[in-house]
Image (cartoon, rainbow, N blue to C red; front, side):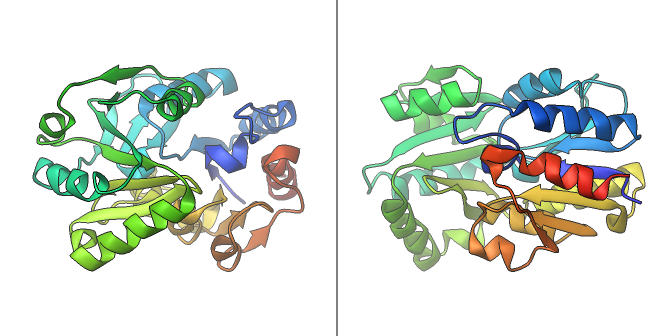
Length: 268
């Protein structure tokens, strides 16, 4: 019997237009009625996830959220942080030096706020889709010289793949976690922290065995999450790499209630 479901948002729970399918919301309510916990597990910030927690009726005692790709875990009512890993400020400048060599959009999360120094249309759209405001700073380098949550680069996949290769070559990946969370989003996170560590940390704290957990995702950053539970699920639209390690691949994609399919299949 499964006691908890961890679920990614973009490309999984949400449709491509970033809206929440009504059938998914109904299925989540059904899971909650059966005593199953439903945990949003995303690269998004606390502020962004709080909006969806409210919408889904997840703001209740002893329910939790995994934010920033496993870096932050908090209780949904009190907002008390159980875990809060930060990216060391000494690496912020190094990451920016790499990114500034390419024509990409750069953002940083610091103190749960989204910052940029050049508010392009692409950055504005990212903030809008994340349900959060953005703030402009004249000195992004100074902002990331102190410990912070993460840096994001937004561009086309080809440029971001070049950046990822450059990161591998220069050795920054031995100090910073670098991975795709979407086709057009490359993230720089605390080293050795990911959704998999977030899932393991929360399960340990609430005394649920991994065999009693389901995780649902679609992208590279979801792979550690689905590998650390009893039932790892990849949605139909997921990348091949996540499908290859999943226990189950949905028949429906994120635009056609894939999460509802999982809940009704595995929650009795």
